[in-house]
Image (cartoon, rainbow, N blue to C red; front, side):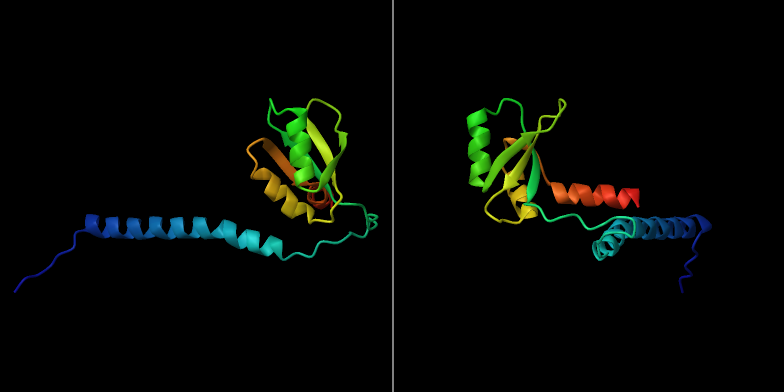
Length: 135
């Protein structure tokens, strides 16, 4: 007959391994649950804000250094847009207006697939972020 004796150190190792595993599981799941909760929030004007007037879809885009003006124009027109203005400052960000009626968020994601585009974002989503930070 064999008697198995667990030492306190092996019991401690098992408890420690189980605790670390549980902590890792929790820390990997918490960001996803927060993102899921925030994506279900209904966005609308707050009491202090009035609804913004309707405007054409606008994108903010920055091209990588060295991209020619001709290449920029080709990329912009390929995605159904036209240049509206350069933003002031040294950011290199350009404001584009979508003239084809395409969804601005979809066009921004498509533009990001082009290696010559460094940054592309729907201007409305930036404004929504600012509005939620203010309120």
